[in-house]
Amino acid sequence: MSSPTDTSAPVTITQIQSEAELMQALAIREVVFIEEQAVPEGIERDAEDVHAYHVIANQGGHAIGTGRLVMLTQPPANQEGSWGQIGRMAVLQAHRKARVGSLLLTSLEAEARRRGVNGIMLHAQLYALEFYKKHGYQPVGGVFEEAGMEHLEMHKRF
Image (cartoon, rainbow, N blue to C red):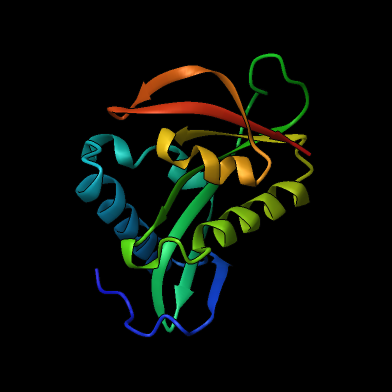
C-alpha cells in the first residue's frame, strides 16, 4: 500500500461511495490489522461491513485512513436509546500522530449525531485509551480480549 511522500496536502474525510473506495479502505485495514497487528484474516472483515457507514481519509490523492459506524440493534448494557458503534479505525503508519484519527472519529461522530443516536460505544485497544479519552469517551467495565489483543469498552453519550 503506497502512501504519499508529501504530507503537507490537506486531509479530507469523505463517506465511501463506491466499491473502489471500499476496496481502498479494506486494503488499509489489511495493512494495519492483519499485517501490523496479526489479526486473523478471517475475522477482520465481518457482516457489518455490508451495511456500515464507512469513511475514508485521503491526502494528496492517496487513501491513508478509514473507520466505520454501525447502528446497534440495542443499546449497550445499562444504557437506553439509540446507540452506534465506531470501529475498524485504521490509519497508515506514516500518517499517525498527524490528527488523521481525530478527523476520522469526528466525522463518524457527526454522522452518528445526524442519525439521532444517544451515544457511541467502541472497543479500544489499550494503547489507544488516551486518544479516545481526549475525545470524551469513558471506559466501561474491565479489559477483555478481542482478536488476540486486550481491549476496553468505551462510551460517549451525546
